[in-house]
Image (cartoon, rainbow, N blue to C red; front, side, top):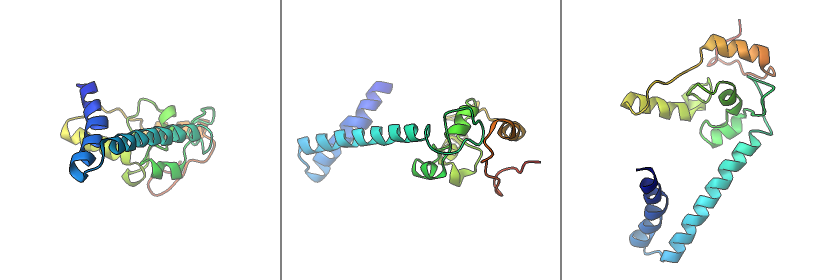
Length: 149
């Protein structure tokens, strides 16, 4: 079902809805859809590239992936790359609560609906230990993150 759904939701619907809904010409609708896809790919890849070049390494300073709060707000929680690469088996993209980490809230919602299950997470004491041992010292300690003992 994957490829038919990709075709329907990435090409067929985004092109036909403007044509039949707003009387947009087929060529204009097709070109606008191609521009949309190219822009989304470029923004996504730029974000990944920047997050491996600029930012902080609070969990593992040896890793090329970084965390940056601004990119996380822009891409709804996917800007916490250092956490993700340090703890790859954790389903969350960071230890922050939902308003810093929209991705986790979506996955948790899917878990409540039964669409996601067997979610693995890293214990807080392990996160603290790794951050203290391997991080660059930039791990934010707020009222939302556990304090270092």
